[in-house]
Image (cartoon, rainbow, N blue to C red; front, side):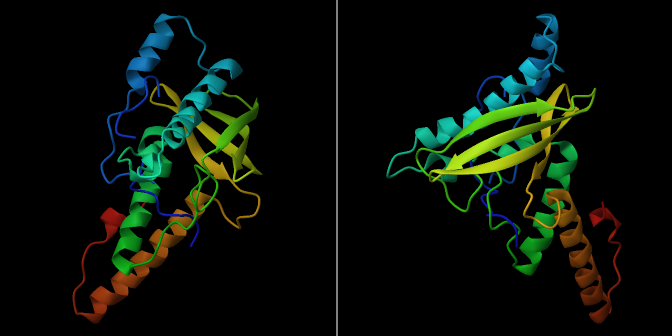
Length: 213
């Protein structure tokens, strides 16, 4: 198990310009902000813009946590889906397939929240954007520091430019033996094998191609 399934969590109202996250992905406002950026002559492949984009994403999380009260944990209780809003299409698609498998098996996909870098988060949770590097037409890397319960966690993000904006394609973790996407693929592959064995055992053979990547 890898990360905390806060998949069904986060804010009802999406911040202008903007995932653990709901079953239905909210409308993405990136298309309109992308048009506005082009109209304003903004270079979306500049370091300054990518920093601003990450500030929008992680600032949203900080805003939700800061707004919490003892009786209302906004980040935990929100239906806003951070993953669908801020992760790349392929990351989110693989995650949804893996989640479907684990829902069938009763397993937990996440035992760690990649957004807050912990199984829980402190009221004074915050972040720092250290460096933006390796910018190409479609990819970039961001080095961040996530401070949670007073502990600094280094986070390396792989960014992908699609749908007119930058999205997180991978959450780097030097301790993890595999990337999130590799983990999702393994969960999907193992789950499909288990499902197929069960179908044959029951004397039923069905087409599983819809569940493959």
